[in-house]
Length: 341
Length: 96
Image (cartoon, rainbow over all chains, first blue to last red; front, side, top):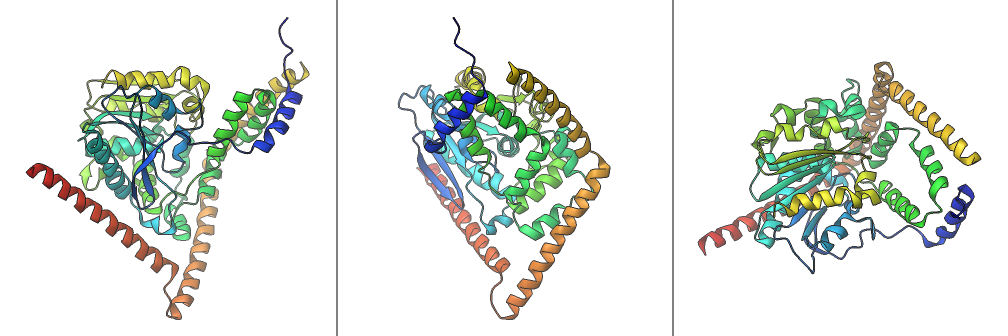
C-alpha cells in the first residue's frame, strides 16, 4: 500500500519543526583565501584526489554572493567538482563600499578578473578553464575577448551577451526616462534593495507562488533545506558599483556593444570573434532574468571551432543549484572540462 | 484532493496574472512615467545631499564625497602596486 500523500498541514508542521534550526549553512566546502584586493577575494578549493591538470575559475555575478555555487552539501557545484578531482577557484566579489562608486568595468573585468586568471594560471602552471555565471559570464566573455592568454576554455552559464534580446530588463533599461546618472548621483552605487525590487517586478506573483510551493512540499526535508538555502542566498544581495553599472547599462543593455564588436576592456577591443578557445554557452528555457535568446548567441559570435550551446530546462537559479542540476547540468560541465583537459 | 484542486486553480491564476503584469510592466505608457518619477526622486535626493555637502564643506570639513574619492584612490594605488609586483615577477621569471 503506498504511503498516504502528504499535504499543506504536514508542510506547516515541518516548517514549525525546522524553525529552531535557523538558516541552513552555505559556502561550507573547505577553501583557502589565496588573494585579497580591495573587496574581492580569490578562494581556492583544492581536491585531495586531483585528477585534472587544468584548474577551473568560477566567476559569479557581481550582484549576488558567490556561495550560490556552494549552497550546502548536495547542492554545491563546487563540492561536486572537487569530489570529481577538479582544482577549483572562485571569485568572491565582496561587498562594495561607498568609495567603490568609482569602480569601473575596466577595474572589475580587466584588473580584478585579469589578476584572478593570471594568479590561477601561475599557481597551477597551466592555462585555466573559466566559467562565468550570469553577469559573471558577461564579464568573463568580455575579458577573454580582450585578453585570451591563459584561458583554456570559456563556459558561459546563463550569461547575457545579446542585450537586444534580454527580455523585460532590456525594455526597462532602454526606457528614455530611465536616467542611470540620476540614480548614481543620488546613491553612488546602485543599492541592492532597488535591484532586488526590480528583479521581483520581473514576476510580481513569484512570492505568492513560492509560499504555495512551500506549503505543497515543505514536508520533504531535502526540498525544504534547498528552498531555505536558495532563499537565504536570494535575499543576501550586494550593491552594484556605480561607474561599472553605468557602463553596463549604457554600452551593453542600450548599445549592445558586445554584439556590435565595439566594446573594450582596459583600452583593448573586446570583440567576441577574437575568442578562439573551446566555448560552451548554457541557457535555460524558463529563465526570465537572462532569456535563452540573450545567452545563446555567444557561440554564434565566437570564432572557436570547438563550440556548442546547450539550452536546458529550468530557471535562472533553480537549474544551476537544484537536485536536477546534479543529475543533468553538472555532469555536462564536468564532461566539457574533462574532455578538454 | 481539495488542496490539489485549489493548487491547480492557483497555478492557473498565477500564470495568467504574471503574463498580464508582464504586459503592463513593458507598456511604454507605464514605463515612461515610472522612469520619470524615479528620476525625479533621485534628482531630489541628489540635490538634498549636495546642499548638505556644501554646508559641511563650508565648515572646512571633508565631505562624504571627498572621503570616498580619497579611499578609492588608495584602492587604485594598491592595485597598481600589485600590477608592478606582477610585472617584476614576470621579468624575474623571464630572466631566470
